[in-house]
Image (cartoon, rainbow, N blue to C red; front, side):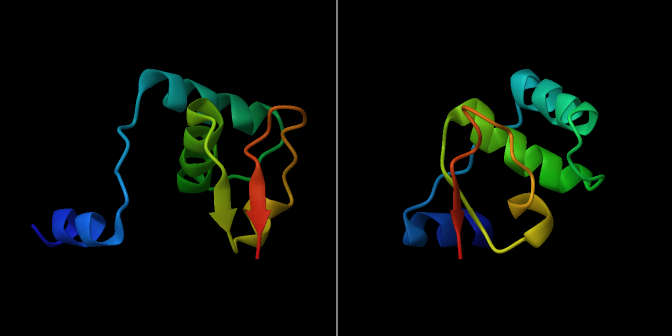
Length: 75
């Protein structure tokens, strides 16, 4: 599978979509996060996993989750 090989070569890991991530993604919508559901899942994954999020996506970068946010790294 090409994705498995690419992830392995890059030293990355794929994280599963969990109930906690899905729940957090839904709550982001109530907190004013923009409407793109994939962006919500990406952001929620960073929040739940307490993982820094590196993105060039302006719509994601303009959202402030407050204390304990996704630790965005801006490009």
